[in-house]
Image 1: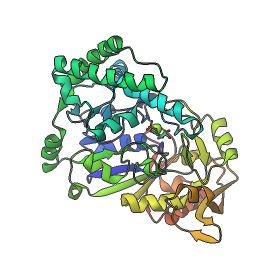
Image 2 (image 1 turned 120 degrees about the horizontal axis):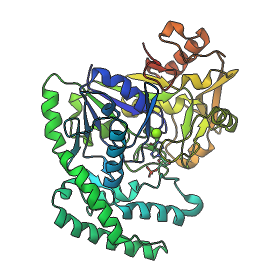
Image 3 (image 1 turned 45 degrees about the vertical axis):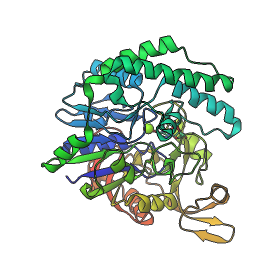
Image 4 (image 1 turned 180 degrees about the vertical axis):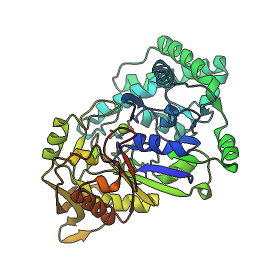
Amino acid sequence: MANTILVGAQWGDEGKGKIIDFLTETADVVVRSQGGNNAGHTVIVAGKKYVLHLIPSGILRRGKMCVIGNGVVIDAVSLAGEIEGLRKQGIRVTPRNLMISDCAHLTLPSHRALDRAKEVAKGAGKIGTTGRGIGPTYSEKAARTGLRTGELLNPKRFAARLRERLVEANRQLKAMGAQPVNIAAESRQYLAAAKVIAPFLGNTVVFLHEMLDGETHALFEGAQGTFLDIDHGTYPYVTSSNTTAGGACTGSGVGPNRIHKVLGTIKAYTTRVGEGPFPTENQELGDFLHGLGREFGATTGRARRCGWFDAVCVRYAGIVNGIDELAVTNVDGLDTMKTINVCVAYKLGKKRLDHPPTDLDALARCVPVYETFPGWQSDTTAAKKWADLPPKCRAYLQAIAKLSNAKLGIVSVGPGREQTILL
Ligand code: IMP
Ligand code: MG
């Protein structure tokens, strides 16, 4: 396997965790390079469900190394809980299969409180964040006031620095009319979590460099999706990191010339959680998918907004990320549909657009131009190879790949490892 970056080509929740888990079989090291515990990857192995937030899904396979890179933001309490939870499910998590960058920034309890207070202050203009403190953590990173994981190794100095940050945050919270954080209780909990994390810390840049100099193959596991990228997404309705392919390099310290392939993950339709523009959003499709028990968030449990497949967006994601191949997931979600719409272009006034406008107001005024496909109306969940898929399903998948200017690489027809078709 080549060194591969896997990105979401929509608004996140494309099923990246499952595809990564599948591809990990032929990889040696799996790397997370951006985002934090706002991500939620659901992976089902042998009927057992695992929800991962910060730890790469490679952890579920024996003998695979997982790395949390410098670009990730880490809530130590949440990560310690995740490690604990995995261990309870029988998964081994030790410094031999997990290494955490000592340069990653820490998400503190104050960041969570600020995240929520800022959302309340925004009122109707809220972003719809996950409330995990992601924005405030990256804000402090950019402001050069953040705390990094490496500082956990000196608990005494860390405790003082943490206190300083919490006092400062409480000033801001009070000014916003929000509840300040309990400094003593939160510090105690954070310092306890720090003890769990400390043995995993190290220089992941050097580690990855040495691994990649050998015969090893790396998989870079993207979190969120292209249109949540801080630069290329639907700003300000985005997350605070670079979710696109370039983020994998800066967020891990691996040079771009080491990367051989970019794989874009898409759903066979589109979903989005949180506020912001969504041109192909469709209430009926949402009701239908929610009725099937599908499309509820892994992190917050929120019902995701749903819409038709948007080739305009995925085409753009192809350019921004340099996507070589597509992995299409949730194909089975459309199994019972009579007809399926695909957005092939946008109409903005009299103009026909092949790419989404970067201006949000213009994007909000775009009207999708649809092409309608006949549904296959049969169960695809047991399909093992391309030929097992109904002809109408194959035609649909080929059409969305062609409209997206990309090659079809993987098709997923259910959450299980075995429900994956490699083309
Ligand atoms: P934040 O990342 O919590 O600041 O949230 C910013 C926006 O990104 C909100 O619309 C969230 O719903 C969305 N978001 C963040 N993480 C994910 C994810 O893992 N999947 C889907 N949407 C996400
Ligand atoms: Mg998710």
